[in-house]
Length: 105
Image (cartoon, rainbow, N blue to C red):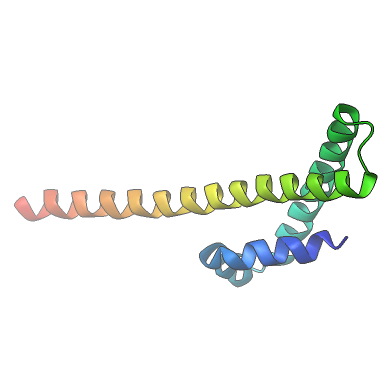
C-alpha cells in the first residue's frame, strides 16, 4: 500500500493547502508526516476490526480499515484547510474594521 500516493491525492484535492505547502517547500515533509499518520491509523483500525470481527477475512478487514483511516485523514485535512480559510477571513475582517475606524477619524 502506497500511503504517500493516497496522501498526495488527498492533498491535491485541497488545492489551497497543496499550493501553500508547495510554495513554502513544505509539501514533502507534510506528505511524509500525513503518510505516517495514515499508516498508523490504518494499522490501528485493522487491529480494532479484527478484534471485533475475528472470523472476518483479513483482506476485507484491511480494506475496511483503509477506508476508515482515509476518511479520518480526509476529514482532518478539510478541517485544517477550513481553519486556514477562517484565519484568512478573520484577518480580512480585522483589516476592514481598522480601515473603517480610521476613515471615520
